[in-house]
Length: 320
Image (spheres, rainbow, N blue to C red):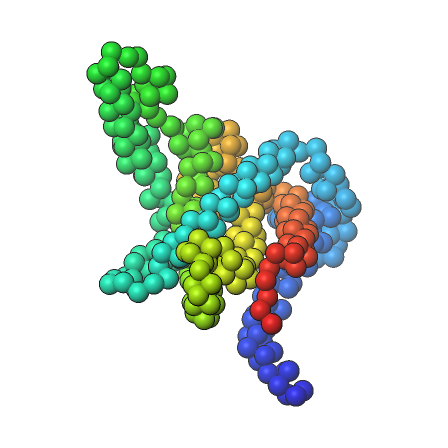
C-alpha cells in the first residue's frame, strides 16, 4: 500500500523538479524585491537589497495609485463578462458535439484550432476583424443599419438614432474607451471556447448512459434530463472549468498587449499589463513595485481559489 501511495508522485516528479529548479528561486526573489526599490542596473546581492529596502512602501503606494485601481476594475470587468460567456458558450458547443454525426471530429478540431493558435496571431486577426473601417464586423453592422434605415424609410418613418449610428459609423472597437474592452472580450471568448469545450466534452462522455435510460423510463424529457442528470453529474467539470477560467481571466495579458497596448486612455489596462509596464515599459524600471503588484495578484487569486474550493461543497455533486 505504501508503494502504491508513492506511485502517483512519479508522475508529478518532472514538474516538481522543473518548478524547484527554475521557478521557486525567482518567485522568492520577487517576494524580497517587493519590499525594495531595487535598481535593475545594480548587481542583485544582499548589499543592494539592504540599501534599497523600503519595507511596505510599495504596498502603501498601491493604495494611492489611481492607475492600479483602474487596472483592477478593468480586470474585474473583463472577468465578470468573459468568464460566464466562455463557460456558457463552450458548454453549449460541447453538448452539441457530444453526439455522432458525419464530420463531428473535424468540427471538434475546428473549434479547438483557436486555442492552439499563437495569441499574437489571434490578436492580429481580431485587430483586423474589429477594424472600424474595413473589418468584417463593422461592415456587417453598417450594412444592417442601412437595411434598417431603408425599412423605416419605406414606411415614411425616421430611423432611430442608433440605427443611423450603425449605418454611418458603428462601434470604434479598439479606439473607443466604451468599446475597447468588449472587443478584447470578443476575441478572448472566441479563442478560449475550444479548450473549455474539450474539458466539457470529456466530462460529458464520462457520464454513464444508464442515468439517461433511467430518466427516460421515468418520463423525463430532454430539458429535465439536462437539468437533473447532466448538470449535476457535470458539476465537477463545471467547477474545474470555472476555476481555471477565473484564474486565467485575472492573468489576461497577451491579447491586451497585441490589440490595444492597454489603451485607449487605460480603458483596457489590466493588472498583469500594468505590472509589465512597471517592470519593463518605463525607464528606469520599477521592479520593486511590479513585484508588489505580482504578489497582490497572487494573494487575491489564492484567496479566490480557497473561497471557490469551500463553496464547491454546496453545488458540486461528487459521485460516490
